[in-house]
Each structure stands twice: as structure tokens, then as C-alpha cells.
Image (tube, rainbow, N blue to C red; front, side):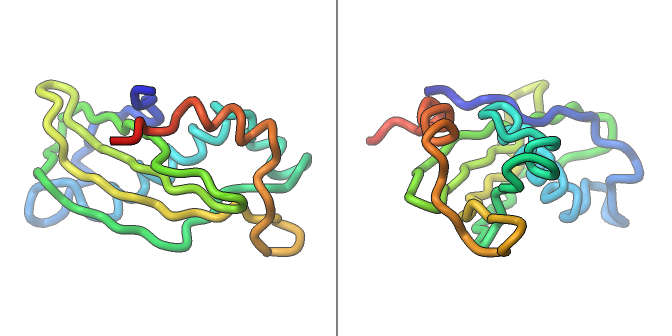
Length: 141
């Protein structure tokens, strides 16, 4: 499966730091938005998170690499795939790239658990979510 676009934006001047490039916090904000976009794509939307099943993926570990600077005015997009799906956990791979030339600016792996928001404990991934997520698994090398 190819990656799915989960976020797109234009880098605003307010997203940039004193060095003139996008601030670290904005990289992670884009990825955070991408995770919620991905959840909606696989059937776990905001209403279901808050009022329905009350489940959401929560990051327990992040491994990131900054590869290229981004500047104000550049259009960026986040591409998301899944490296693995476990019983209660998933590993997301997010790639943030500049749209103009497809240069990768940032890559991060988010190790997440499916959190039961009532008990605040990891819970088993329901079969319907697992099925919809499985089409986004990266091909094994």
C-alpha cells in the first residue's frame, strides 16, 4: 500500500522560529493532526472518540529525524503508513515533505497504543479498525 496523505498546509511566518525555518513544535503538530486524520480515515472519528467507543491512539514513543529545513510559504504534506499492527498497538511512519520538489523534511515513527479513554489503559484493537488499517501496512522488504 502506498502512503496516504493525512495533512497538508502552507508554512506560515508564525510557524517559523528566529532562525527563519519552521519550528520543531510545528513538525510535531502536523503529525499530531495527521494521526487524527488517519483515525477518521479508518473509522474512528472525533464523535466516536468522544461519545462512542471512547478510543484513541496515544503516542508512547517517538523516534524522529529532521532532514531538511522548511520556510514560510512552502506547501507541505504529511504521508502516513503503518509499519506494524499489534494486539493493542501500532507503529505509524509519518513523512513530512515539501510538495514542490517532494523533498523529505522530517520523518518520525510513532509507537502508539489504542487507549480506552475511560480506563486510561491500552485496549485491544477492534476487528473493524484492524481490517481498515491493514490496507495501510507497508510492504515487507
